[in-house]
Length: 173
Image (tube, rainbow, N blue to C red; front, top):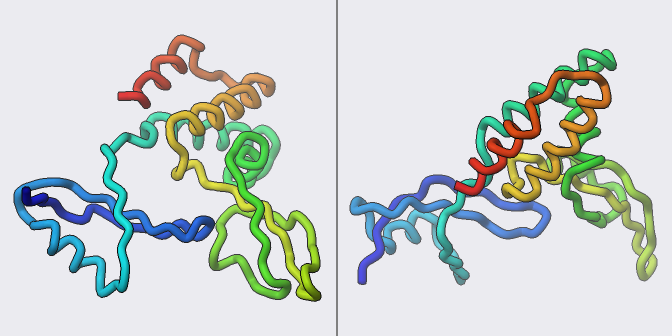
């Protein structure tokens, strides 16, 4: 059997160190050419699984709309509100880095969580937040529910429960 397709995009998860490669199967390229496009590597580990939609653009638009409206009420910027929502309702990991290393080039959303020493070597611990663009439908649902509850508490007009349920149903399709 010959598998054909083309590379749609690639990225590296700096928290796990795993490379991600998105393929679109078609009749234009053979699989060997796809691997060749990845460059010369000594060893490969390839996982093949069906594509699934991560979340809808409507959910993303609603997230940013509500962050903007909350920001307007509390007189700040939408990015600050988004970061606060990530801290309250988002996904995160703790990462330990040798003291003195600047983590800004590696993480977009993070905060210092503490310091430590192991075998005489000093480390800084950071809580690193995963951006919502990386969420699957379950995590995006949890994140959006949190933002909606905050917006409602501030008197911001939000979609009805029925419309929110319909929006979430779309994620599974």
